[in-house]
Length: 545
Ligand SMILES: Nc1ncnc2c1ncn2[C@@H]1O[C@H](COP(=O)(O)OP(=O)(O)OP(=O)(O)O)[C@@H](O)[C@H]1O
Ligand SMILES: [Mg+2]
Image (cartoon, rainbow, N blue to C red; front, side):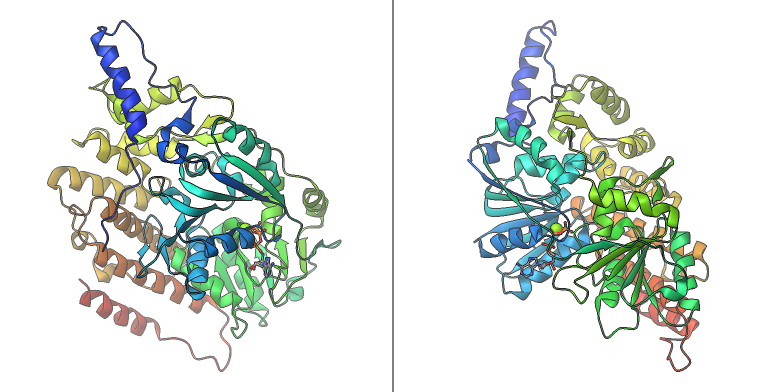
């Protein structure tokens, strides 16, 4: 296996600039102030990209207009390249696609590394974008996500930092002026290509009258997991359809399999119940999107969906070249129809600024000014003082600060603390945050974190209730976190294989739960009896312990 390079790269040029700053700062006895929080020129953080005059191609247009298709065609023809997408599912779809046409392509996400012999291409989630190696062609999909409060900074990093001869950006036209402004200070050239929708998307004049009117290829969109399972049951109780489900906290592998089951024509799971986890770039065999509501809880409050969100989700219906090339959109409630119609007709609001976050090396140098401070106060101070140009906003670091507060008293170095802070922990999930705390404490104390001391196969069972299911999803998150850490602190987290096996088991148990929840046809053979399935899985698990 190739050595894994962590995503916290020390940028030599900016490090050099900051070191000069520090030296002058100390030699002048601190009297001459150097501003380490000046983030007004983030393009200078990426010397490899700045050495090039990159050709930027902006592919913009509505959903289902062939933006990604055209960018991928160029990627496929190039001698080396990288696809960066916002979802693991998209990175997976692209690597499958390239490998199918005999362009060997690695898959690289925070928790997965699939290496293909001789690959010069890779499909990655945007956080994993490589800003140090040259390539001929790179694609950043859904580039309007530079405006995302929490993840936008990773898109900005990829945009400014990828040293590709050709960089293809795909997304909503609302991003065009911002990209042009951001790239004014680089030496890159920009060509904009506008696209039209390839097949029609028709908003319905009437709401869905009854669940008896659900048909093959329908996708009901709703935002809470409780609602997702309520809808699934309601549809399956009618006895005519089985539903696949896709939502954010399902393990990604389960999501992929549920989506594949729905996409596969020969399968009886012909209706999809999903959250906005399906909302980006995915090509599913959806004939009609039915919004159960146009409101969602965003972590703080209930709010109406935005125009781009409605367009993105609705755009999953009627994909060009799919079984249902004509798409329909409707709602469960007649009251929601006017907002649906107006949103589909409105352009998305123009993006004003892109996310930004200091690289680790900048934070490290800043920390030397306050050698006694923990990461939490340091981050807070840095964020408060950060100076930005109007094209940027500082990323929302709520989650990072929550982690920093938990681990700050542990005897860990700055780099380790930073790693835990950028890890994919869900601090709103009790089990997930307890997992992180336990990992960090054990790591700080012993320098070695063995997974087998924390999980036994007996603790994994097919859930019997929604609560049990949620617990299993949380356990999956903890195992996922272990795998993520094992790629970055290889010696201290040596049980990656155990974690991966248990993750697979978790996924199987969750899928078994979903299967059991399905409407049972008179002649349909159930997969296994409950206890049989569990004991089989336990045996498999023990073999890997
Ligand atoms: N010229 C083409 N020939 C054959 N298939 C195409 C062509 N253009 C697009 N497609 C197919 O149409 C579907 C939609 O295209 P694509 O995914 O590129 O749309 P998009 O504009 O990126 O949509 P979104 O905004 O939702 O990401 C895909 O399945 C793609 O393979
Ligand atoms: Mg796309």
